[in-house]
Length: 130
Image (cartoon, rainbow, N blue to C red; front, side, top):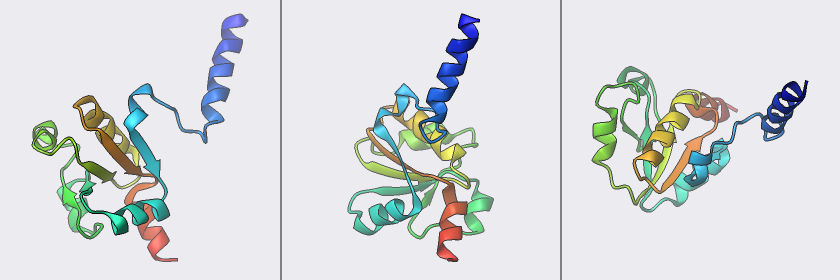
């Protein structure tokens, strides 16, 4: 019974954080809503806009100025390894799942400043159509 209550307590704590699981790896990863992501792009000087979708998804529409490195590609780590780890990266995908995984991996590899777009390109295009 005690184990059950502990599991329930942990689940409730995760849900009280907006339903997003907090990961200790994400200390240098910040999730931004569309408005804040746009602000970062507009005010950007050295920030890099990184689209981690497939080349086909990227060709179907993307945020202007983004570079495309496919998270699912076998050479993903090699390609991000060629990037400057000290720059700030604004990372997005279609829904936000791949960008969080990509940012986690980038953090593990020593990237120091990472932002992800909550809801991904889908949220971006939805906001654009409003």
